[in-house]
Image (cartoon, rainbow, N blue to C red; front, top):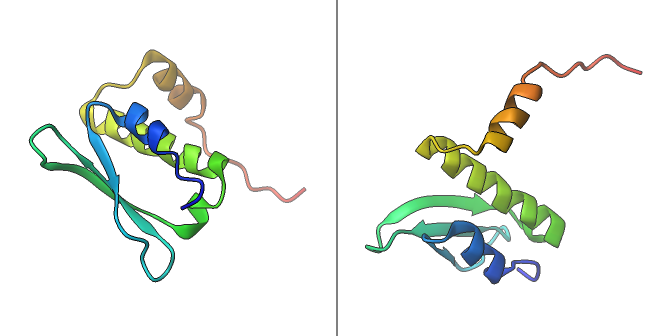
Length: 95
């Protein structure tokens, strides 16, 4: 968990309180977000591959934030614009 930035977690998920469980045998950890009543609001396994670099870990955090926004129905206008622009199906035609 050398690339887990706890300050990033706290800032990204405020007012929810993030915590990470013990490292599991496969190297993954469980991210849990609790509300002010200590009720679990969200939980996700973060694989060992997702904590190998600060960049990848940042992408995981951003993905979780997006998922929480979608669930809450509160997407920013910037994210809505990106979703509309990227709504097409990717082409997999060999080069």
